[in-house]
Image (cartoon, rainbow, N blue to C red; front, side):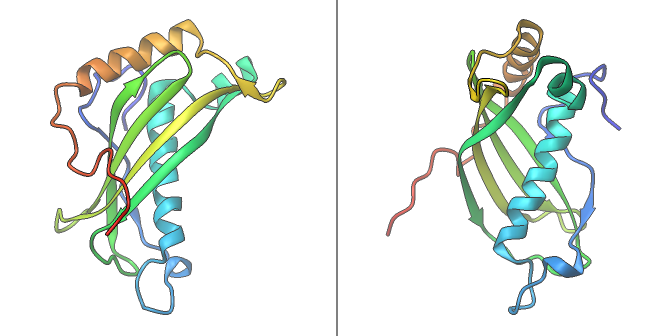
Length: 162
């Protein structure tokens, strides 16, 4: 298990999870909504490593909100199949965090889906954006610097169109 004291992995790798029966739709594969659930669970794993965890939220009365997200569905994944998510910090500034997730089939290694997501740090009392606390920003910048050595994911920054 990766903890906040572990060396910075590049990319960050989530725990292995399994496609649950309730995630399956009428086509017999994981429903589109549950890809977002799976990516959200991977975000939680990464945020715990970053220090944006329950303790941070309780102590600071701050959290993160999603501003925008994009999902690319590349391959089907079926009930009971294992997957894991690689997370790369693409960018960070005083208030925002830009992540890119890649979901892989845990047995075959095939890329199943990607998720690009932009977060904003929010003061929960004011319900307005607020800068990350200095220690969190420093941690995110440190991780972003390590992740900058990774190749930029091909689907990062894509827009939808014909």
